[in-house]
Length: 167
Image (cartoon, rainbow, N blue to C red; front, side, top):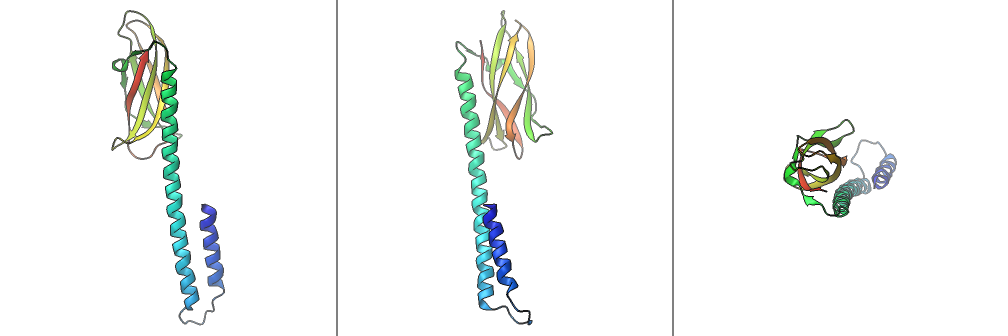
């Protein structure tokens, strides 16, 4: 897509280079060429933006599918969403979002946990998902972990526990 924009700009420059500098109005062909150049650049930019949006949606869908697959692989897991609390979302030095989580095992025996964390924008639109596996948490104990987005997320990002299983 960038090649199209660059090509359009170069072609437009070549058209304008061929113009005389007699101080008069540019010939109609040059005006028409400049108009076509602007139109092509705008079209290319819109197409590039649409492609970027589509790629982001595809990445989000892929992350969601991977999270669902990881949870489905847990056999005999019990719902443990109430055992997980999230801290505030921060942007790491690599530009990805992360959120600390605390797992509290309220039972009388040790369990492992697999937790899906969903990252959303301020309007609640799904952006990304991460799955965190917490090794055995002692009976009545707590454990800390961090969920990190798979890619850079733009704007205000919030997180919520999508699913949590103990097993």
